[in-house]
Amino acid sequence: MLMQTDALGMIIWFILLMVMFIFYPRIMLSQLIYKIEQSARKMESMSRKSNLMTARKANSNPSSELRKKIDEFTDFFVVEPSGIDPYGLVRKIDQTIRSMEKRFDEFVNEVTKGKNYKERQELNYGLRASIGLRQISKIVRHNVELAKKFKNLQIAMILQMQLPIIEKIAESELRGTEAFVNGWPIGDGIGSLAAASLMDMSSEIAEGIVYGQTNISGRRCFVLKAKGPAPHLGRIDEAINKVMKKHKISRFITIDASQKLEGEKSGTVAEGVGFAMGGIGQREIIENMLLPKKKPIDSIIIKVGMEDAISPMKKDVYNSLSRVQEKVKKAVNRSGKNEKIMIIGVGNSCGIGDNKKEIKSLKETIAKLDRRAQREKERKKGSWI
Image (cartoon, rainbow, N blue to C red; front, side):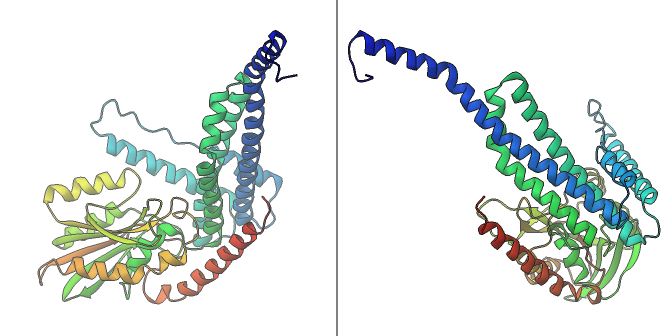
């Protein structure tokens, strides 16, 4: 009947075409909403799981009241200072970050009893990963509800196209929560690990920062890192300032994890210049301190995947340690024999001790985490999903 070329066939084709024009976008929208709804529910489930992990860190058998407190705190937010008047913006950001840190400490002290410092810090950083995951799930849900409310195909399509990346980030936040509450090293900690591998002894010099001295190629080196093995980032700016008041530093070397490009191998080591440090606030303070003095600043970065920075440290990233040490020695040799050098291992100290002795057992931990990751990978490969 549809093959007819007479008037009746033309009318039928016209009717079918109009039906497709009217109903196809609606059918497509329904299919898209179904898919993004499933993703939204999956991320909400991950957020609840992350919150439960942190609640169990505070108490192995969390009460409904404790779980409610954790759920409410994961809505915590920080208002970025206004940048309309840029003068003094860095100081305002720094003060805001300090206030945030204080609030986290207060909440952790409120919900934990009988926990030592390390356990409280693990809960503190577990909460931060939970907050990140909660925000992702809420933003995805917001866009799903917008698409449903306004029958908007464009919103649904944009969200669906971005969902593979969003889901990867959400999964890494969940693994990050697990890593923090269990005290496992994460990918971002490779800079801290490299610094610890250079120190025989260390002592605390500033808030959350330890330092030690070592001799590399006849040069006196001062090494800084976040205090471990509890999760920490610390105040590197304060530590640098204290060391510089006592010693004339000729060169600075920073070691940090950096996001790799797709196609690059995880654990690749690269050299550059500038103060390698993520986030905002501290880096600007440090640059204002060092750059006017015209001191050379070398940077050594270890490439990690987008989702690997907060996830348990991968074997490829851990194995980059020897190459990092070679790059550090090469950078140190650019200085004169009698010059003093500062080496700064940037990154989270979760699961990472503060000297060579304290990180000896880390190789075994990384091997266990690698075997665990391989089993998880095989399980997903065998799934029909």
